[in-house]
Length: 493
Image (cartoon, rainbow, N blue to C red):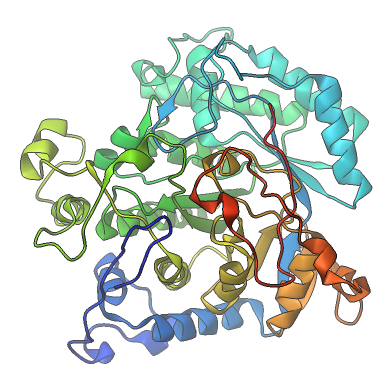
């Protein structure tokens, strides 16, 4: 049994009942000659040792990325607004329109943040907000244009699929209908897709360069409708990304796990992403998914985090697993709320948090399973620098961003933000050469002999006294054990 972060317990893996070769030709998978089926991924998840999963995933990473270089990016996560029409139970960041603490950043505030990024050699911003119900499309166009005019060298990686679904719902676009916030699915699908493409083209003309994979969470409907009320459906999320690929943009993909979902839900989620990438490749679309990042749910300060936690030592199986397996086996329609409730009444009412070993297991399985997505990101932002570093030996090839600013998971109690020097040290101490990349994973700077980490004389200076989030929660007192440290940043308000 493995203790989960925040006191939850996670999966107990039984002893290997049979030889691996009886179920999976793992050598062929590692060599790229064979593809894991969803059933095989489930079997490995439940029966393979953590050590073996790490070895296999690392072998795949070495085949794809080589033995020497591991990457990171210098960007800034700018949340232009926290106003959101959705009511996601896992989110502690959003505010309703007019609620105390709600905000929309001014042009001057946005530009100051980008200037600070540019001054330290940053190359892109990750620009996301809530699903604002009233900002017109012209506001977003003006925001992007002003950024490109002032900072033409900065890549604008902006607007997750849920934001696009809100744009389609509420924005006035000549020749197209609109709906109330969160009700975009009332628009006929073909009309919805056409309006989406028009909106995306307008934002691209204003400076949008690529799409982040935020809002992925878990796609299967029986989970998603419980945790993401008023948010994009799994199909809408995938439709937004397919449109981006059709128009030539690169995108990332994500998964948030460790809450009410079952193991089979995670596999189904990854299968939908893999199938979508297969489709993009078959259709020869100019855009692709370039990366996948998975992270565990952070429970502090969220409604979802107040659910009763599952007792792994009790007599009852985790209800999320029971329902997920029935959906996986085709016995229950995930779109049928009544059928799902009747099948497993407690599904969605119990929480199973994911700890470090559970995270590493997912990291490895995703590398083995997502054979058509090149890069796998480490989630040190939620798991901390040392587990993030260890992920480099479980299938990750990229340490992500230095995270000058992060507000969404910080609002849920996460404390971790790292400097460029610290990320370089984490990579170098793992036996790899750190390299700064751009959004397309092109190498910008290689630090084989020199680097930001080579000019630090006193690593204790990288150990601030305060956490990134001042709102309390279990993780607010977390302290790193060495130079892999926290940078104190306030939540934007």
